[in-house]
Amino acid sequence: MSISSFLKKKFLKSLFFPSHNRGKALPENLKKLLREYPGFWDLPELPELGSPTSDKGLVVDAQNYFSNKFSTNKCWFGVNGASGLIQSGILSMAQRGDYLLMPRNIHICVIKACIIANLTPIFFDIEYSELTGHYLPITKEWFNKVLDSELLNGIELAGVVLVNPYYQGYASDIETLIDLSHQRNIPVLVDEAHGSYFLFCNNCGLPKSAINANADLVIHSLHKSLNGLTQTAILWQSGNKVDLENVQQSINLLQTTSPNSLLLSSCEESINDWIGEKNIEKFKKRINSARHIFEELHKRGIPVIKNDDPFKIILNTGSYGIDGFSADKFFYEKGLIAELPEMMTLTFCLGFSEQRNFVNILDNLWNKLLLSSKSNKKLNIMKPPFKLIQIPHLPPSKVWMKKSCKIPIEESLGKISADIVCPYPPGIPLIVPGEIIDKERVDWIIEQSKYREDLYNFYIRVLKT
Ligand SMILES: Cc1ncc(COP(=O)(O)O)c(C=O)c1O
Image (tube, rainbow, N blue to C red; front, side):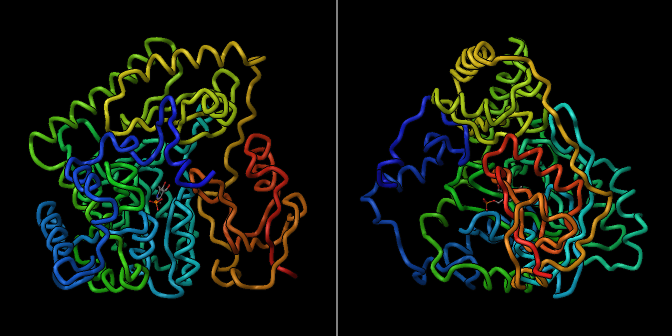
């Protein structure tokens, strides 16, 4: 089957990214454009259009309009996902040899940026829920403990990178975490890939956007948490801790010389779609419907977990002895496609169109799954084996291109990883290059391999000694 044929495939219910629900929630102006003669709109960087880093043109006009509207210094559209702009942001904050502080649930693109730019990630652990197997939001007390840790004594941090909200929709009090970093004069980049729409709904009971919480750099994924096309993103810069020219240079360094005009238009339209009272009212209704879906599922006894993003519905399959991967497979075969299977949960992304029949479909299939599951075995959930602060033995870039060999994970004890072990989704590394592989990490990865096919019989690249 060709890719183009597959793209026409219909499912009973698609609850995955991109959040425009297979076109239903795309901005009207973008839908109109797509109805034109196919491909007609695929223009090069003509003088009238320009690109995100040009001096002038329609792209820059739109960027200037948005950065003024949301009181930031500047913003840039991106057509290489949130990944591309997060990496540019990181390159603009730090110089070769610098250290960056980040939580253990950081996205893989940050580690790749560290490899490219010869930066050392310093990881801090996060509290963890045995009920869901998810990291918990970071409290003020916890973050203070991290920042005051003895292991950080004498290390000058070039920046802190935070993820908020998490993939599953949990949010920390981001303003407090940013304040604590700023009190120590450390700039903060917030990966808000999953929380773009927080910026547009100030009084909807949603977490505060990092833009309104004084973050220096914020990156939004416009296809995960707005209604844009896949690959679209935006980076916002505020304050004076990160040099604006450095950001522009770093975007230039990594971006393609031919940014896709349709994607640039999607960046503009997906943000425009959330501006203006009438539009906000429409999306407020969606937010309320999403909350109603959660309440209804809860009322029906379906084990859903409370979070801070109404558009992410987390099903706690593990509380019935069913791992999220098996549940995902079962639902997939029946046409209900979720976003994120994990050991204890399965997360659905509702997206921004109306979801009238989801409650009944899930209720029906969940009951079928319960009937077909053999026993209520207790799942063996292992806490991630991390210390409060961990610094890789060697900087990741120092080992990335060194001579290495692939060996079974069971035989890797005591060796130095030359690999990023990172199941996707959610794209959170379990081990990064330069870390010494200890027994706790091996046991933890092997335990997960019982449920995840991508970790089964796993081989890891280690440094040759
Ligand atoms: C927290 C987080 N940040 C960044 C990204 C990267 O986004 P993109 O796929 O748009 O490059 C992801 C993708 O899953 C993510 O979950």
